[in-house]
Image (cartoon, rainbow, N blue to C red):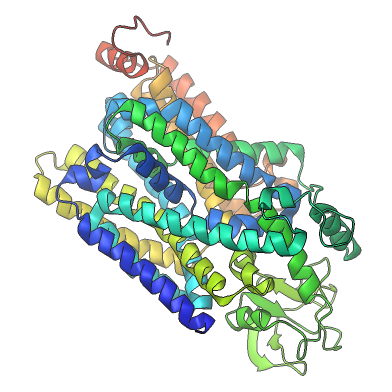
Length: 590
């Protein structure tokens, strides 16, 4: 059976599984739609959390950005994994003890204010749509390559699948679908990683392969990659180019942004007890670690294989077919600048921006580009989001492995997209309608509103997937910065500080969110005349500015709280109950 047929088979079977689970677990009440009835087993919830957490950014894009950025991309590993530990230990048990459906629900009750609830919904929607744009882009990339459809059509197919099981099953359907998606995605990630690890080093454990000898060179994978890249004019793979301040800021923004992500937090509302929230957090960390300890090895070996199989090859005779396949959908581009018929991979920008294909074929067989500068020796452009997906092809693995990776990439993107879309719909139907503007809304009407909001959210997410503001991991990093600057401080202060009032929380969230959006808008999208690296505040990039936004949020919140009315006694008692088990005495908070 051909690779294409295997891909259709694997993806089709996985879709049938997801839809079957959605039908079996159809939500019949708002509690099942929002929190899966609150009865999910900790191990199952751990798997679902891992699938929710390991999005297209983790599966598709993280290894790709590490492959090309090397040491500088370690911020993703440290920030995302450290942030999950922070969430599991610092916030999850207390939020589960509070016992509400959504993050705005907690903030609205804790800060005794409909305005706080509405501001929290605003923050949640902005963060979630920024995040989901990356997921839908990932879906489009996978479909376009492996199912031979345009990227835009791939996004539309993904929207249709998510629509079915998210709108029908709600959190109940999503939870059990994500258990299946985790099994698919982790198997799809580990199998090619083990294959490639054995081929490159003979060691079947990818995390150990980084330090193992690559072939018979006498050098480890990292040493060989360092030498190969420096010979081509690139910086050494194991040396960073970012400043220490920027590395610290990005890592912190990713870490605290993780702890403020609403679609991950809501997973801890789906278990029966507080102790189950802790247990499911532990299981999720185990499941997440399987991918995150493997990703650095996948990245390094993918970059090494790419250079050694592509650089210097004659395009017409020797260049692997996978290069031409990805070139066909615009995610690889080559311009024969020196007219020698061979691909030259070197330091420097191959094109001005993304490749702009003219639709014509050049003398060497390449698709002619109209924006290739002559000052750079580099002739090939590679979209970072394709490295994990192309890895099996680069290493000439069997067709069934390529098909498996396609199914895994789709599972990773769809699992997180569904979780994000659900928290958006729950916030609109539960927090805006039921708890704010239409308190008399019946449960049936609320459930219908939730499903309607999910439909609208899917349509908007699809538009963002077709018009993404960057590659997957980059878009997701911006979402984490927005979460760090807006929701995280309000949640932490709501749990650990009895004296934080509604005015402080509201102004803190608005100031942190506004500052971060304006900063990202200026340096990513050219607002207010744009600016370069020399204009960055404290030398911090847009990906790390969420850390400054968080500090601003805290400062404004405490400043406003000092000059406004104190917190009512009933709310102080609420914080006491959240923080301390019954009979344990007074809490040591202030």
